[in-house]
Length: 161
Image (cartoon, rainbow, N blue to C red):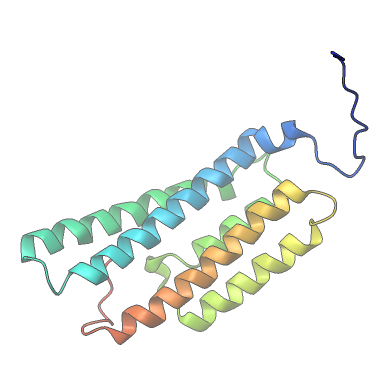
């Protein structure tokens, strides 16, 4: 039984340390918060017509709090001096999509395409960064789709945050 197995390293592979750096973790956290905010919006929309007013108020507060946490995290990422410039740009694009900016479906689609373009530039050289940027783009597109579906529900034009 051989103890040592040598694997030829792939010169195109991104070092694991670059994926574990603070900036990548902060970006990952911001994307998780964005996803949580989208879920809270959707949950509020799905339940608001069926639930009691007190329960609806709790869900609306949860959605607003989720967006506030997400927004704060994105501001921190955008203003982080050691962050990759494209990570900071993506945070700025995501900030344009938060409810207080009153995004439209078309503006969210445009922001998603812009972030995807940045991701494509890094696909071969920095696959970890590219994957995070692609996820950010996907979240923007999902946000746009959520807005379309929510607007079809009764009282769907109400903004909850």
